Length: 332
Image (cartoon, rainbow, N blue to C red; front, top):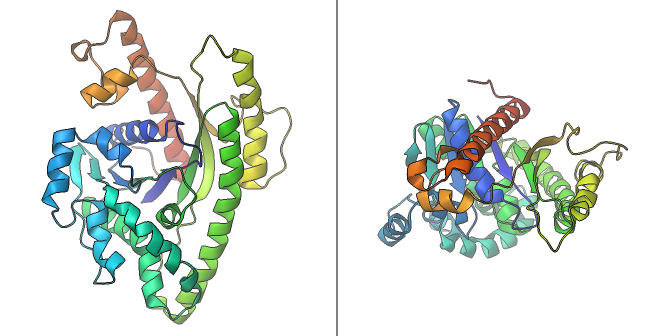
């Protein structure tokens, strides 16, 4: 099983929409896919589930029904994680929904992380690793071979703990100044978190091998660029300027490699895809609560949009196949 998160310090770069479509396409291609919503804003959950369905789910408060419900005993120091009850979304696709209550876990994580440096502090380790444990429980329950972890656009303690459940990180980007600055923030943070976690894991495994801490290192494996949507008040050459800086910035700030000259986004092996901005399809897909590549005329698309749906389907199929290869999974 492999786990991946789309992560950037900059919001509004299509992270939620991309995760939703990647999960659906990977399931369509025969992989058993589980999605965990570790973002307290729950935007991805709201895409998967209708408002009425989500309201009923939250009001029921059923054990294991959401991420927050599963970890609440650990947050309060009153027990172990509750077995999750992921929802079947489609063939080969499951979701463990999010809940706004997850934001209450941030402070506890921030307090406990420094305490993990002591190999005798089991409480701190249990708190910091509970999201990793929950991801493993979901994957085992549905026999998933691919796990998507959705996180918010912050560098806080919650995201740090969430990434401990991930083998890989992909950075979603837009060709603008804010995405580049997001990379400059994310790169050093990932390195620091990985270094700290390696120290914590080695110390605890040396004293308590039975802890069986999973070696997830949330390694950055590439980036996705969502193409700009042309605007009258912003010249296309402005976007091109920022796009040209992406390959070198990714190497320098995220990978700590020498910034090779003359590499464009289109020729960069770290660029998993340059995704079209399917602006006309997004609102229709949101209303239909289905991927853009599944839209039909009965959903409200016009004649010209049928070709856009076909292009969208092919782009996401190619992207998922490339992501599967990067993760080292066998194609189905």
